[in-house]
Amino acid sequence: MPAIIDYTKEQLEVLQKELLAQYDEFVKAGLSLDMSRGKPAPSQLDLTNDLFTVLNADNCKTETGFDARNYGILDGVPEMKQLFADAFGLKAEQIIVGGTASLSLMFDNIMRIMVTGTEGNIPWSRLDKVTFLCPAPGYDRHFGICERLGIDMIPIRMTETGPDMDQVEELVLNDASIKGIWCVPKYSNPQGICYSDETVKRLASMKCAAPDFRIFWDNAYGVHPIYEDVKVLNILEEAEKAGNPNRPLYFASTSKITFPGAGVSFVAANADMVEEIKSVMTYQTISHDKLNQLRHVRFFKNAEGLHAHMAKLADAMKPKFEIVLSTLEKELAGTGLLTWTTPKGGYFVAVDTIDGCAKETVRLVKEAGVVMTGAGATYPYKKDPADTNIRIAPTYPTCDELQQAMDVFCVCVKLAAVNKLLG
Image (cartoon, rainbow, N blue to C red; front, side):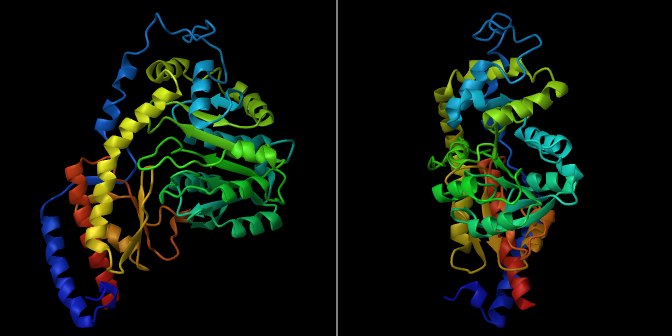
């Protein structure tokens, strides 16, 4: 039997009637399902409930005897720095512990360089033009920061090994206005791509026209394996080897490990950058929430405890990813209407429709009672040039709800494509 994309007009018209009947049944069912963002499900959050009771007045001192209820320790309690260092393969002295979200630290660090500059270079806000490279599909909130601050964005094609480094290297070599690149190096959002050793080394060593070029290394899913714990090279080590030790700023958090609204984040960097960041932080805060840092230390105890917790989360998430992937395989494999990634970890599955069908698919899905991330959100300025990419976020619904949502989604993919093919 031919792929749907190769159907005759008559075959497409017959299929269109069948799909419209199925779609009308979904609309009548009055569904209200949410796959809009990568939120942990309540059952995942329940695995962390001991955070509520693990700290009390008798154990709120750090290992050095410091009372975490009081002022002090700008860069974070030593135990939290060491736990992050051990879990992410970093050094404790490279780490500054922040508040609930790494996104705040990313925004702060761009604002710091915008206002005060870095390494004695002109603050970015005084320049006529500042540009960031944006691997796409990518994380919409990265793009939102740039758009809000008036930073121009250049989309960079994503490959199976990370951003297209030929394109990146040519751009940064010849344009001094290019000051940074966004990177989600492990289980990228949304495609689940892991950067190869070659990609990391080339990012660390490439020649840049801008002396203050920065890599914003958002390792949001660095400890989030589901099927395989892929090893990605340490960008801080590689940049130091390449003679560019100040180039990377490394971010992560516990937002999808413990409680998204009450987690702990960090930024890691070379010693010079750590001091530069702290020199501004000292005017911003006396410290972030040290009691919450100690809660996390008491809960995990060490990096091994954190990884054991992540194994529980993987067990909770795996059935949902299998629902998504098995339903796509059953309903759309061989049709020519959709391609998708099979991530080894992280939080998302990325799919690509035929050209010009992503927005219509998401619109149909929404009309049938399923909310998804808007089509185009994974590209700078929300402009997907081919209108193909959609991000599936399977973690929040129950398995039964997710199966319903995927059934709706597959019908909508087919219906949008058939309507497009019929012109």
